[in-house]
Structures are given as C-alpha cells and as structure tokens.
Image (cartoon, rainbow, N blue to C red; front, side, top):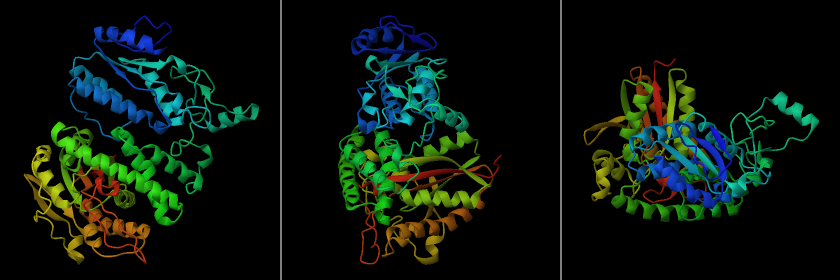
Length: 482
C-alpha cells in the first residue's frame, strides 16, 4: 500500500493506495482511474443516520457499481465479513475487465459520535479498507477535510489498556491511514450500542431505547437495502421486544409504527418496480439457490429445504438459539440470511414463487390458491410433510401457522411458545438426516399479533409490515463436524 500525499499523481498498479483528496482532485483523477482500467466508486458525505453502518453502505455502493459494469452476482454469504465481501467483489470485478476498485468516500465528519470520534465499528471499517490497499488492487480515497478526525484503533489487551489509563485518560487515537499504526491502541467497545457509551452493559436502559427511537425516525424515506436490514435487526426488533415487555415508553411504540408505515410504503413501491427492473433483495423464492451455494461452500453432499410456515424473524431467531443448544455438537449453523417475502405475504404466494422461480414475479400471482392452504391442527401440525414446488421437494412444518389462528398470551410468552413448538419437530427431523447434509430452515411470511384484553388475538397476515415481510433463513450442516 502507498500513502500518497500529492493529489495529482496516480499510483494505481497491482496494489492500491490511501490518500486524502479534495472534491476537485477527485474529479481530476476520474479519467486517470478509468484509463488505468480501474472502477471508481464514489459516495456522498455521510450523515448521523449512517453511524455504525459504514461497512454496509460501502458494500452496497460497490455492488451497484459492479452491477452496472456487468459483473456476475455475488457468491458470498450475506453474513460474511466486509473483508471477505471485498475480496469477492475484487474477484468478480476481473470478470468485468476491471483491474481494481478505487473507493472515494465523502466526508466522514457526520459519523462522529458524542465521544468526539468515529463509531468503533466505522473505525474498524476504515482500518480494514486501508489495510486492503497493501496487497490488493484497491484504493481508498478520503476527504481532505477528514485528516484530523479521531477514530478508534485496534483492540488492545485489557492489562495494556489499564496500564495506559493509569498514566493518562484514554482518548481516541487520530484516524490511522494504515493498519498496524504505531499510535497507542484503544479498545473498540461494544458495537451493539454505537451512539452512546453510557448505554453499554445496560440492555434495558431508557437511554438505549430513546437512541433506537431516534435512529428509526431518522431513517424515514428511501434507504440502501443494507441499512434497512441492519436497522430492522439491530434496532426495530429489539425495540419491539422492549415494547412488548413493557420496558419502553409509549413513544417507542409510536416510533415503531412510523417506521413500519414508511417501510410498507417503500416496499410496496419497490416490489412493483422489481417486476419490471428485476432489481430486488434476496427473497424467499431464492432459497434453493442460496442453499445450494451454501452447500458448495461447506462441502455438503445434499441439501434439504425446510419451510416453517409463518416463522417470522423473532420466532426464527429463538428457534435458532434453541436448536444450537439441542443439536450441538452434531450440527452447526453455518449461515444466517435475511429473506424478503413477496406481496401479498401469504403462504400460497411464496410457495407458488418457489415453484416458478424469479420469472414468476412478472406473472400474475394467485393469493387464493388452495394447494397448501389447508393447515393441519393438533398433532398433525407438528408433523413435517413433503410439498412439491415445481420440480423441487420442500419439507413443510405447519405448527407455527396452526397456533396463530387462535388468541394467546402476551407477545413475549407467545413468541417463546411458538419457538418451542417448532423446536421438537425440527430437531427430530435434523437428527434423521444423513451426515454432511445441509438443512436450510426458513420462514415464508410473518404476522402481527394484535393486543387483546388478556394477551394477544389471532394473528394478522398478508400485509407489508417489517414483521410480515422480513424472514429468517438458517443453514445447518448436519453430522461430520470437526
């Protein structure tokens, strides 16, 4: 890697560079980058709403630029680290006759938190990108106005950190332009609460929920896919659970409702556009391809798809926790993905698209199809049955869907009941599979639980809220674990 001081020379070869440049130099160097056979990816200045999400935004911007150049789709799991994703992007760039990627970031000043420095996660992202320039065809250009920003350095052993703290208060180190900086390291902190260190270690503090409320409110309007997904997982779901437990104030429920309304409006528009443009997020009907890719990655001998009807994200997250306790050490969860359900969010539509594939989006969908709408009750609902979707065989568990037809207890208790009801049949099914089988467990659509006098009423389904649209997917490698 080369740290370039001057703005007018270009040092792009088989390895990259790091430099601070102003907006005019960025424009002047564009033609030089293109002449060198590299791809220039630029971003605007970042605002507070992007704090802690720098890695996701960069991944999305590079993906869009590669797509415009005709590069093949990614073969890397969504849960992979930014470094693995960047390596995959650089590999795919060569297929589009691109020698390297130059990333020109807008000002990072808007990401500075109340500590006076960049968020620890964002600091780690910048360090990783700078390190990638050492031995890969990747260049990082930062705004010339950011050269004095403060950022956190690599994690340090606690004894060293405390030794430094006894001499003088620990402060964020200046932004390193190379990994392996000689400056004193500062611990990275807890990335789960990126905006305020006062909330670290206090999962139920009112301050934590107010921060989450503010971030959801600031996210109104169109946002990159990666940001929407991260907000849902890290902010919307925890805040929803806090509201259902009675830990968060009334304003939190209102913030959730505003976010959900904005999400539904944006997704309905995006889903309609996807039928024409074919630009879309990973969807439920993509599961066969996602599972096959995961199987190749982990050396599985065969793939089994298990659809848990109406297993929304929080139910799936709890099922995953319980399965890890139940199946370890005979199985391991190798991947987690977030899937988007097609509209309307009912089982018949998702199964129909699983049969047709992506081309089914451009064809009329029958939300009233009856090929699997008869939901078993009682013991039959806990029996995993086989379902034909086009030329594919899918296994289906109906116990969650069957339990949603009636009223139930408060939402926290009901989610736990649903997860434990699904656990037994899934664990028994998994133990009966051959070694080196990849079992992909996924939900098809979600639900909302209306509040009733003594608990919750029958579930509402078919809408476009985050709970109904965003589904979990877990890949489990069965047997043969080393």
